[in-house]
Length: 171
Image (cartoon, rainbow, N blue to C red):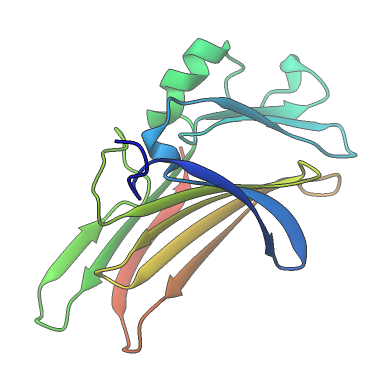
């Protein structure tokens, strides 16, 4: 429905002193392929759903399977980041949350955004759960010294303490 706040939308924003393009509601779009730029011999192709391939120099130096675009689009469930949270509520109950589930689903409570800096050197995936007052981001960047750099940030967006268990990594 046109104009629905749930429709994907894009805009330029400033974050951490850099200009980024943000796509809000990216999980409601068909998946697409992106690249990360860098000044090193590291290369990376990432889908908007998180599937990826990356390596050094050429396809023979791939760290993750070097696949065609159609296979990368379908590969997010077996190659890429995975994050699982178990959050203990004030009522003593536990809530399980996977910020970037497969399939992506369309839970209207969850906000999912994708950010890419204007120079194309950083890519950020973000999921926000307003009811649990938790936000999770992960960022990809390339480094000559370290290769692929993934930085993850978990944010308490509320005023009260949160108890949780976190599992985060790559598959």
